[in-house]
Image (cartoon, rainbow, N blue to C red; front, side):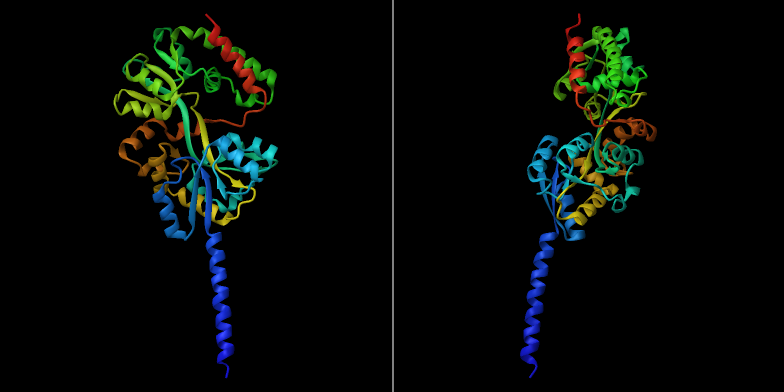
Length: 358
């Protein structure tokens, strides 16, 4: 006589189970706001197979990420990947992120200097808002058969290379030359008078160096063509550009400058209203495994902050990476911090004066 009650309880349990399953399925979707190549389809499939969590990928860039999260107050996505120098200013102004719980990050998988640098550059009011993922640098691209003695940015000004070098007339060049001249521009970011003193010295050096400049390159293709054609023997350039030419001309190599390459990092950051925080931490720890990180490198073209991630890329890519970046060279990278308001205007005036100089 208890069958009806048993049947009723069973029905309730089944219905409750369906509701819970539906809720769980909804919760187990990670909405990722990222750059192209950072979440390859194969990696997404492997993550779902291991965790049961689906990943919805939206490709974007820094400006769009800020715009999307600002418009929703930090809602709509569970994990974002802004560059590390674009987080604190957006957070201070729009309050769109929530702090990272570092106890949920497997720090043993990350290159220590990159993790520490990112923590420092994404800290606001004592809280950390980002951890590192994909990175790259501005370094030196050198035809070692024709200019083997170029080891730092200032070497581009050696008179014997008149008309044979190139670099951009952009702020990274100002920063690079400052470091090469023994100054620390990043340390002066919050002192405009001191920063102007540094800029004045860099301006004088860049004007002095003008006879060496074949052209100020503005795009990657133009840069590569200048190097490939032997019109220039050395350049301040993105590391990937040098590696690309190296495949055709082995004598062309990417070199980490003795004063330190300039580095950018795209991070992992939690939108303020993430609905899948646990899934976000699982994704971070999953993709920082060396073999998974290597798959992202092959897709995106840049290396990640995963320890030993270079061991699993193609042999050719691994060799040029290891030839460029020893452990010491990685630790010597100067990571871009957030730029205080007003500095870019100061830099723009310097670049205008350099270009106008005869």
